[in-house]
Length: 264
Ligand SMILES: [Zn+2]
Image (cartoon, rainbow, N blue to C red; front, side, top):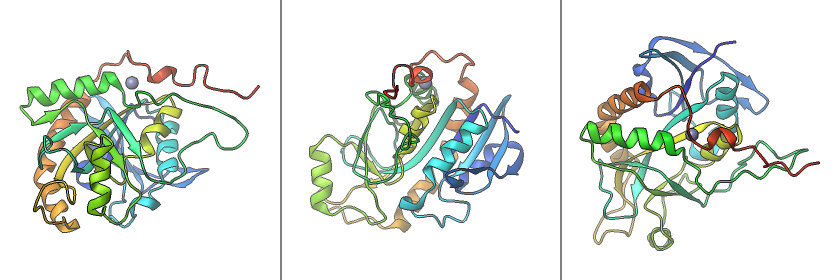
């Protein structure tokens, strides 16, 4: 069985980062992954890449096989996951083109979000769901690269595939959301259930409907254009983060299942 140190889940434009890349397929008890997994190297680290919406981008947010993707990375021995998402801004501080590192989420989607749904009762803590060690490394790396980057952002996840109404958007802002997205959840908690570290990087593509006076509602086309402008920066950013990650994990993620099981 192949092994990898780091998993990357994100847009298909990212896999050109990998050297000596090959495709592998992993079937899990939760079905197939979004696409075949690309395995290769970034520097000395072995990296497994999964394009979340498939290479053809034909999997809508509610149909992404979140459990299969995380299960497959776990089978490969991955301990650290770096995930990227295009996000809409609910907070005027976060502008199109900026990078944000998620530190909290508010889940408004309705999806299966646990591996523990049959014979075991397990309650993991998700008080601090994103890996503090990786977030710190990413922030320092981004600053060094002079990116416009924020080390905290509360991401609201909606089910999709439609965008929010103006009223919903105002509501999400009022409950403390900074940015909004359709696919950031449940990857982060599934990774935590597998004791993996998870870093969530958001690329702000637009202001969400109704947040900014006179902002016209965004189209998928416009989001794509802004995302594509950021992709070369994002590639370099991920390359540098991967090279900065030390072998030793100093965070709480690896202990997430300690004292979490209720079943006797
Ligand atoms: Zn961690």
